[in-house]
Image (cartoon, rainbow, N blue to C red; front, side):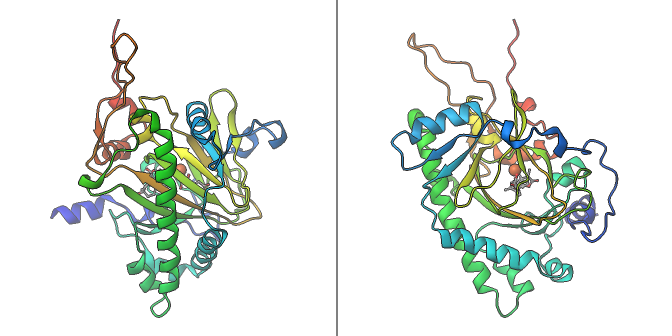
Amino acid sequence: MEAGAVLLASVHLRHIIPLDFDSIDYAPQPDAPHVASSVESEDAQPCLPTIDLESPLAESSLVRACESWGMFIVTNHGIPTDVLEGVEGDALRFFSLPKEDKMKALRAPGGTIGYGVAPLAAVLDKAMWHEGFTMIGSPVEHAKQVWPRDYMRFCETMEEYQKRMKTLSEKILGLLLKNCGGLPSFHESGGPSTTLQLNSYPACQCPKEIFGLAPHTDTSFITIIQQSNVSGLQLFHERHGWISVSPKTGSLVVNVGDMLHIMSNARFLNALHRVTVSRTWHRLSFAYFYGPPADFEVSPIVKTHASGSHQAARFRPVTKREYIRMKNQDPDALSKIKITREG
Ligand SMILES: C=C1C[C@]23C[C@@]1(O)CC[C@H]2[C@@]12CCC[C@@](C)(C(=O)O1)[C@H]2[C@@H]3C(=O)O
Ligand SMILES: O=C(O)CCC(=O)C(=O)O
Ligand SMILES: [Fe+2]
């Protein structure tokens, strides 16, 4: 068998094609039942920090939020309302199409872009009440399959959104890393790796029996999430348990991914989060992932103490490519690169 055929055979289509949302035809999810009921009522919950990016205190607030939560909300982020509304409108236009039209944009086996379930479903071998459309830059090849004559509008909306999100990601990371040399220039390594993922979670008759997205951490440095006005996103916090991150019109959610956790030598928490589904409402979200180039070696930035000695590195250097390969085999890839010291 040729290498390509082996790859094709090893990626089963059931790990790409979303569920049939008109039925409840999925295997029992033993660890998902009553997920929603394990969350405290929203009034009793602590609030995630909200950070005004135009405030003179933005830098210190961002650092504190990453140290204590790994996730925060940003306002005054500079993304115009029409850009936010544009992506929501065009995503809804795509996800509202009949399934056979969406299937024209199906992700290729082993590929990363196009329509399909989140790759996490294959890693965990778990059904999720979710469909996604992933793009890196222009989605033109897939959009053309779906709308042969009218694909440009969708592409322009998505390209503009990604341009704005890249600038915002670099602003946030620049502030976060200001004290330790700033965001590295990825120029010579081919630029940062960036991806936009449109997420759709249709209304579900049995919302307590299945996740929209099962608990996970993102691989990125940071992920910027725009939510439609339906709740569902939850963050795990060691002291508070699962807390809801409710949508607030015009604001964006930012979370720390594994790569920034590693680069900050575990100072910044990588956010463990999940998505629950609603019996009544169709929820959409748009996640922009900003990470290092695939072959750029990410190493912990360690502090030098006043005495001249260095803080110990808690992880060995790793490229995103190698890390993803490990994470695809075991979601707890961090433990594989942890440096343990005896004595
Ligand atoms: C750039 C990416 C990050 C992501 C894998 C992907 O290639 C595109 C989808 C992303 C996503 C979204 C849902 C959760 C997640 C773990 C998954 O399965 O697909 C993330 C991936 C990630 O952060 O590793
Ligand atoms: O739908 C959401 O709010 C979060 C999506 C998410 O976690 C992801 O795309 O990685
Ligand atoms: Fe995520």
